[in-house]
Length: 375
Image (tube, rainbow, N blue to C red; front, side, top):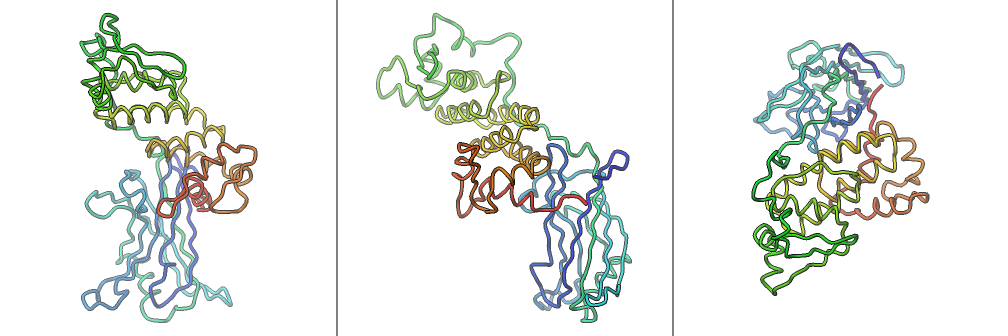
């Protein structure tokens, strides 16, 4: 991957036949991957008067590189540029009929307008694009369009997750007495590997689940026997205090248990807990990024828990550094089924999420791997 100073260069090469009418080939997707971050792009040619509407007759043809719909809400890398150059070639003789560029465009990041890189229609290269697609002089020939994105290395750092639950105060206040004051601990939560004592009045007020549970009968205990004790403690700590502590010995299975328990408790401000746990999970996934099995486990966790940043980090590592191993060990050439005979549990989890309206993790990985990222 070319590195120029503090920037990385990503080269995308797009070859298509010049046609007289709109075609799906008027756009192409590609991605730029480095470390734990992905930017997904769509290069497109907007023909303007595609359908012959009278109001669009004078509209020019536009060439742009924009974020895909899936990543449109993500920030764009600042101080980035895209250089366009193209040539039209006669397919039988390989003779160059038309040539334009290079032309460098800065990034545009208007949250309520255009976002991406846009080739000015009045530029020399923009004029070449107009000539290529207006009239019929070049129809049937081959266009080779090269886009070179220069993106600062620092733009591939993972964004800090917003809206996280705060850490506990230096001096614990009244909220923490429900967890620490033994004279108040009159309720037992039975977990898979031990019991937790807590104040009944605290969980009654803080958890809608326990409010329903205790109103139906005067219970003195509750059975969470299918859940790890640490996961219940983390979810309970947040439910009662609204704060979180860094998670010791964090793992995908523990994170899933924490999130599922918090959902079960119907904790107030649950997204803040999920965001805080996601921050710790991202750090763990980055630490484990050299192990494909670990990264896939975190990837599955991101889907179970609805963690988009963790999802992106895992996809970046799988497609960026584990592509060959993933294709060898987890596929049989199918875009649907994961075989992974050496990892049957992982394969079963990857396949479980198949559906008509939602791509599976397996498909998402394969699609990303199939997209050329650099040249």
